[in-house]
Amino acid sequence: MSAVDTKATSNPDPPVVARVRTSVRQALDRLKLSKTRRLVVAVSGGVDSLCLLDALVAALPDAHRRLRVVHVDHSLRPTSHEDAEYVRSVADGYRLGAMMLTVDVPALAQAEGRGIEEAARLGRYRAIRDAIAAQAGWPADVATGHTRDDVVETVLLHLLRGSGPSGLGGIQDREMLDPAALGEVSSDAPGRTLCLVRPLTEVDRAETVAYCEARGIRYLTDETNSNPAYLRNRVRSHLLPVLRTYNPAIGRGLSRLAITMRDEERWLDDLVARTWRRIARPDPDDPSVHTVSRDTWGRQHPALQRRLVRHFAVQAGFWEIGFEAVERALLVGDDWGPPRAELGAGLVVRRHGNDLRFVAPTATSNRPDDLVEGPR
Image (cartoon, rainbow, N blue to C red; front, side, top):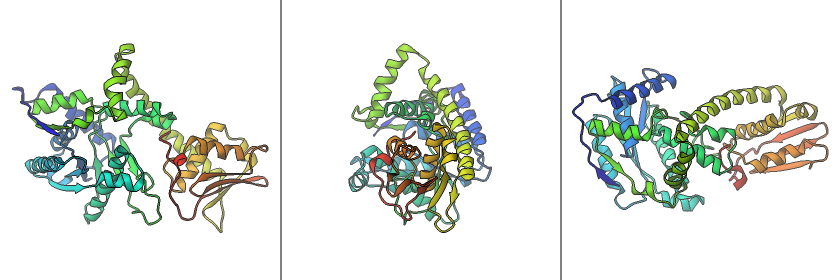
């Protein structure tokens, strides 16, 4: 990263500053963060995270008590320690405590067979979760600087990967990351769930830049954000500009789509959970087995059946399950279908007389590719 110097305008409170701070205050209310809830602010040193930090300090009169900064060095560049030093100086300037963490992303990617981007994300959130857990008596949510642009880019990325409805929600403004969501499927994975909150999802990236310039905040720029080797960068620099030639307001349109899909997914998730509790009978001797009458199963709409299979997988500790695995499960419910379907990692659906039995593994193991196909 290289430092970018900016100059404050003569206006002590430019409209963009008031607008962003109002949006952040509204987000804190929308996210139902109590007046005593603590926040760890993930700060890379880039424009979005520094905008968020400054706006949170302005929004919270007791910021020195409620906020703490966290920075993760991903060990991807020889000079990354300089970014950490800058973020620490920023935290000191706000008189906030800071946690400076390091993750060896290349080693993690090699050890777990993941791409660099995925390994960076998982390693970052694992490290933050563990650092918070180590702070006895200091539980906190984690605030990240994702903007509306990130939401739009994520919607397009999910579309390109063949996403279903949940992926069209883009980035959630609140997200709970349990061990399965962090790629940890062994039984001895840490049990603590990490709560992410994203107060800037109603703010455009151009506004965070204007905010920092108006406030005179010096931020860092990451050259990898323009590297075409990463799909997100190609979506940002090529696909979105092309789409704007068809609809100049494509970003706002996709953002509205994401908001609608998130709300509908929350409602559907509740419906699916209630349906599962109504039709699935847990085995009194083996809690890993649930039984559903085939007659009852057959009366469910195929769309609901698919969601019920996914709900079964999530309840068994698997955050995502691929399309092909779900379709294999649905075939078992038909008279002409196979009597059994293995969905991977010990998840099984089998026909047993007039019943369907959903069998979860008693101890989870590594998941095959069709269980981590992508958000849906």
